[in-house]
Image (cartoon, rainbow, N blue to C red):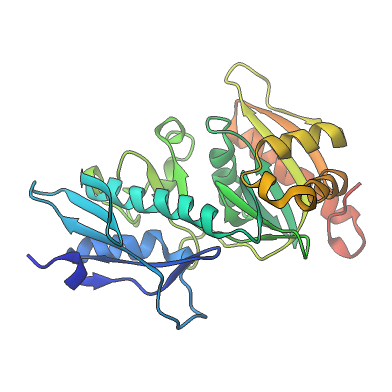
Length: 302
């Protein structure tokens, strides 16, 4: 069987913020899955050689895959769907390390009518689930995990990696199951322990445009709570953003000032969330109401 270096399938150039890469595999079917999952990161405007290659190679055990980045082993003997998940994980890590020009947040981000919604939160807060639900409701997708803020221009920048859905959210997002008819997976090993939900053209999940942030929504999943929004003060919003900033210290006072502008310029809310549909209704309604009230139909900060 040919190695991935001589592989049967190679993706086009891909970009996660400032991180440029491509993927090759010795399995044509797996290659098409990778193409679909990473379609939102396709780098159509750059013809320079890619900087890093991921290799997905069939391992000695039937049906499993080894994963490498350049000459570094990332994972061994993974099911095909989980091997793709490892690539997504490493791309996310590498994008964070490579994108020093942006202020990065452990956050989701969306775009609605030219206005950005930033959703900061730790793992388990429900942020990716909320982002997925809002994308399903029609908001433009920027990212579900690593939000990039261009401090020089005051804009949220798209990083449309696949939406990662964990098992606890499968029931609430069943229509996004890659194994469903028309999905990118076919169940079992090809889906993986987590879903990597495709975005972009042909998926019904639109990629948003670079946009000025207008809202900060800080989710907290609590199965026993009433789903409700509560207004945050500028100070509360500042600390919610700061605790979820990935690279605050390297940017020093520039980042601190940017955080202050974000907190003061956005409408900021805490979201207690037990029901995803109700949470999405509240957030989408908030954005729509602000957009209708603003001159020219765009949302305004306070």
